[in-house]
Amino acid sequence: MLSKSQKLLLAQLVRDNKSVVLAPFSSTVTKKAKQEAWESILRQLNGVGANVDNIKTLRDVIWANIRRGTIKKVSDSKKTGAGGSELTELDDTVLDILGRESANLEPVKVEDTPIVFESEEVVCTTPETEDAKAKHETKPSAKPKEAKEDKTSVFQKPTIKSKKRLKKATVSSTAELEEDILRIRKRKLLLECSKLSLEIKIMKKDF
Image: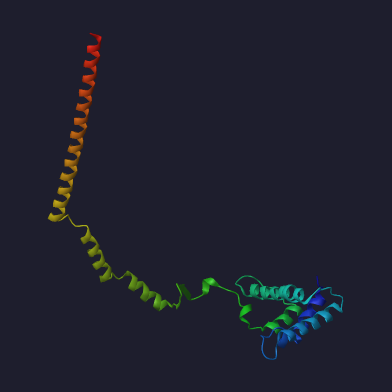
């Protein structure tokens, strides 16, 4: 873990090499140039007693934590009623690097935003547009009414044709049921006849 003076030195070195280590890649700012700049910072930092293993740890962990700490401190100080902390020399150096008007330093206030997100669209609303929207929503629309009337027409009383079709289906079902009953009775009668024949044979044997 770096001391306060070592963290300040790191921030100052990043500021001095900002045009390379924090710049986007280009024809002049290459991966090799960034690597060499971070290695130079690492050597100077370890030269004053820091014990950082590699530039990945220096860049992605140590420097990233310093930057996040300053951003959080400034953001908290801008929130209503948060009561910000006094900025240190390290914070001032980080702000010199990031830019004091950077969007990264602005706190997010969801309750104050006038932007309403709906599906994929972004709609900016004002009191006037809100009133117009409310009037439009409360005003009855003719199209839904027509749709409602069309919907109710589906549930009208059955027509004469549909009644005949229903009656025909009922008669057909009744006829099939009666045929089943007759078949069962006929089968029962045959079984009784067979039983009677067996009983007669048994009686003849006994005599």
